[in-house]
Image (cartoon, rainbow, N blue to C red; front, side):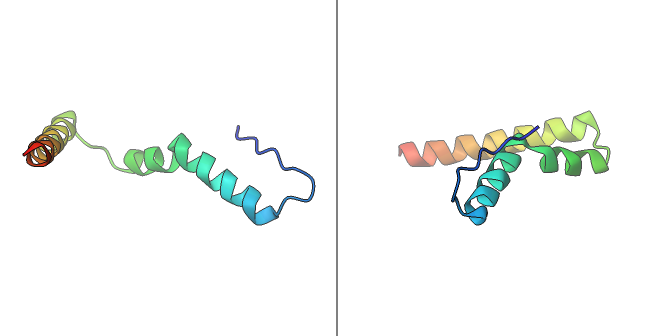
Length: 64
């Protein structure tokens, strides 16, 4: 459960912004989208490998 302490006289928009930020960090929406469709483990592993190669390539470019 997300608890946002609101100080007296604090703007409601600021409290809502804090709530949205905390909610985003929990990853609930991301997990919900992932669970909507089944993805085979081999497909997810392949995607992870492709992403790792891409990141490694970027780091090598940055080092040069």
